[in-house]
Amino acid sequence: MAFDTTLQRPDPNDPVRYRPPAPVADGDMLCWRDAIVAEIDGFRPLGLDLFRPAAAPIPVPVVIWIHGGAWLMGTNKREAPPLVHGHIGRRILEAGYALARVTYRLSGEAPFPAQIHDVKAAVRWLRYHADDLGLDPDRFAVWGESAGGHLAAMTALTGDTALAGDSGILGVSDTVQAAVVWYGPSDLLTMAAQNHPQGLQDHDAPNAPESLLVGGPVQDRKRESAIASPVTYARADAPPMLLAHGEEDRIVPVGQSRELHDRLIALGAPAELRIVPGADHCFVGVDLDPLVTEGLQFLKRALAG
Image 1 (cartoon, helix red, strand yellow):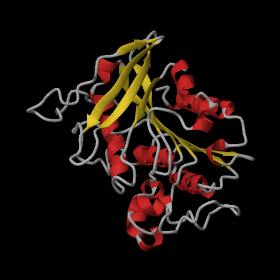
Image 2: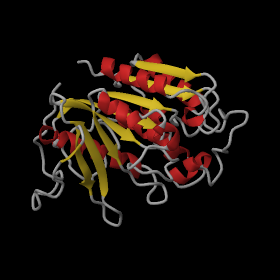
Image 3: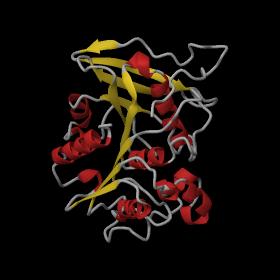
Image 4: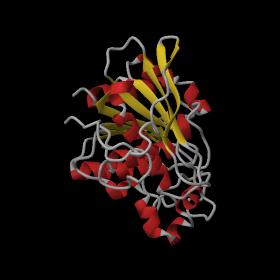
């Protein structure tokens, strides 16, 4: 299915408001840095950095990378230290994909659903400008880790159906065609019950990242917590998803990925689960390179059409 990338401008009185910046050559890449995808009253502008292999035949598929940080911290400007060892950004580009690093409001700036609204604004911006950027609007994937994995799953499961928000470019599809979810929370209400025996967090505590995300203790805000949980949106026609999780994760319980995978499989959705023996959060304790390779192989299959 082809998406219409020539729909509504963000502001008919200011048609260049969200125009891409001029690309800059950087070695074998073209780079669009600090592109503004949405402006929200009272908050900083939301941006992204886009990198595209200069020699790749266009249009190219794009991987939208969503950083982690417990929804409390993090930036699109660098990879988390454990991930640097897997050279994930470089590996994505070497595989022939464009790479978009997106920003979103943190929980100290705004509660959920602001974060998913911001990611979807980035998806719409990329699709709207796909022709100018050399991107294939029919081959969009999200890849996220930890809190970013949660947002990747939410993006994949709610495309064109919910939680779109009203910022940035509207009238353009926010669907993605594949998702790689690394150790992401899937059900905020079951995290405490699934905790590792040496778990480092009480996920029901008032100051837990999950509670800060939804504006109060998750068990006291069951409706808000369910709205913020990917399992709520599991559906048979979900795009292909690869869920990968360390078996010894002491921050986000491995049961979170099992729960979402089982829900998707029960509905007949194309989901794969990879439990990594001996790995803690961020896959600490194991070699990242094979896991990056596995993610890239999954995307090659999922985006082949």
